Image 1 (tube, rainbow, N blue to C red):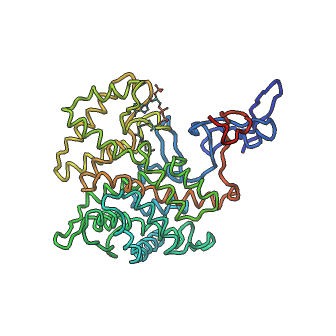
Image 2 (cartoon, rainbow, N blue to C red):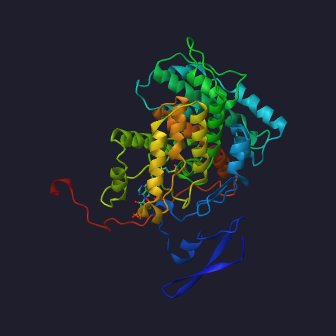
Image 3 (cartoon, protein in one colour):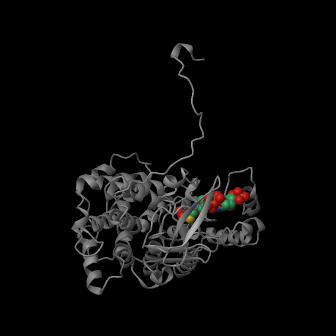
Length: 432
Ligand code: CMC
């Protein structure tokens, strides 16, 4: 905190607002005393310019395209780390030592199974149930099968039995929901496999068709999960914090975050991108039709996979995902027309004044679906994949919120009332 202040004048009265400075030098007006001092609240629909908390987890500069977890560049982490190392980093603030990583891997193996009674739940979802509703329900249900520990159980940093169980079991739930959706027998987790290999094995191994784990797919999945692992106060993470601020425990708070992620403007976008690319393909590559629809102010249609609330330059995650997409397809000798369409669309959008003026570039969801498709993951599972990646971020924020100094404060925005100020009551018989 600095001693700098900003002056605010309302009706000729001047008030001093403290200025709070981040560790990277950005300034924020601290308006917590505004209502008390001036009688005013602030209006900021969509939280375009509202800092809801102070956080030490992720740093994002949307103008420069910077994304760092706990101070480390996300590109370095994606290049050199395993996903669970990054999960450990987010949760504890430090990269694990070899011993800590071995212990954490051991936890992932120890907690990989889910209670057999939970498996019966899968049988009672309708056959076409969305994997996101299944995931959200099952994660909320973990609370009843595995009583959550207190926050002070913490044996080594931010990794607790509660958090390790959640990370490992959510992966199993995700894979089982796919198996149930396919009507295939479950493939139980194997203790000898890494986090990502185990997931692919549980998804695709069949008794009559053993699954060969392709290293290039394991590496791509690892990168994708790392790149999705946190993104500061996005819609689902803010949901987790808001729900948790009411004193809700970890598993149901994460379940709420999964529901928030589901939306097509958020984690649902990668599936929507595939539908858009497929439509362009079916339409004989009529790019102009879709670009013009997206530019038409009278048409709500948007080119999914472009634009971001914070990034006003190329999303640094999209750069890595695009490269990984090429690597996967060329290593596996897959020719996917949707990649060609995506590349052409990006090229055209990049040359279009409408998109240039609004700084609309490909975001994290634009190329990720093509990689998932190469893995054999169906479109309706894409948001589940996003949720698996985002899980350590959600947990870290829930923990930080609970352990932080504002932990006793429930999240509760204000509003500017725009309805009828007051009216006289009309009895039932006199209303028309
Ligand atoms: N296609 C066409 N126009 C767009 C697009 C797009 N994808 N995105 C934004 N715009 C226009 C928008 O119409 C507006 O134009 P104008 O100033 O003339 O009214 C301007 O750009 C600013 O858009 P906005 O809606 O005010 O921006 P926002 O920060 O509220 O929305 C967004 C961000 C990501 C929801 C939006 O860009 C969008 O809808 N993109 C498509 C959906 C998508 O790809 N979502 C995934 C986001 S990344 C993963 C995640 O964070 O979950």
